Length: 294
Image 1 (cartoon, one colour):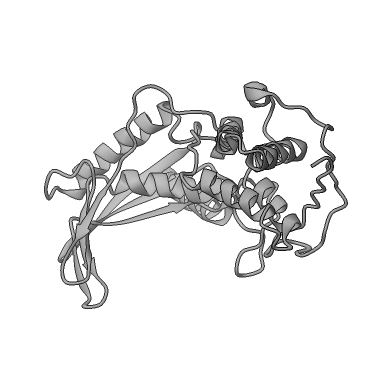
Image 2: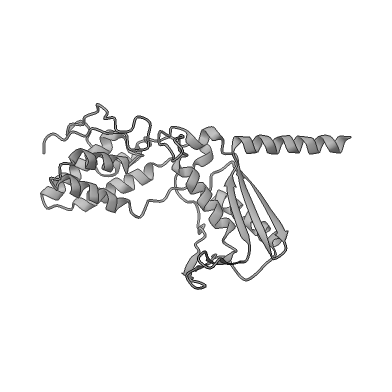
């Protein structure tokens, strides 16, 4: 294997989907040895408002192994498997992911420990993420799931201790958001509006994340969503998931959609404020200030 050409093609759902680029990598162009590659910068830039501790996808190594095995299977899709391998390592520069790909192919063909090469590539990509790692001994909230009513699912937050008033829960959520930010589980510099509503038969907790601009949400993205618009960065969804997990850490829900069964300690809603939402909030705040001065 002296010459492996990787021709990255823009993936489906992106601007110019299906078009092949002209980049070609020849073995020997870039030499990577062990962990030295991890000292370099990320191939992706992530806005400050979305930089938070990054964790390796548990499926990443298997996906990379599949790409290498596929490239050696003579299925006529060698270029596809090479692209797929590179796409799974977005924080490595193209030549670096290509070198890992070639090393894994060679090790596989020669009966060596090719999975060790895969593990190193995955760890290298994870370490390059601009978000860094988790600080201190902070433990992210983890809910437990078990069978609920009929076909439903009973989900219990890690901090659930029984039914409590939403006002008190909001105080705990604010404390937890602060701790998560200090531990780099959530990005620094963001603000959170944590409010509650009470109504006949229930209560609700609402969390709004403030400080992520519309420009930040799509910075550098070329993927398209189902509406044909530029898709949000993956960090946007990850941020929302983490905040929602914190908001639901004190909750217990038993929901069965088939029978319309809905039994929760409180309803919860998490959103990331858009520029339009921010402008409306600021206008309303200005009106309230003006009314107080009259």
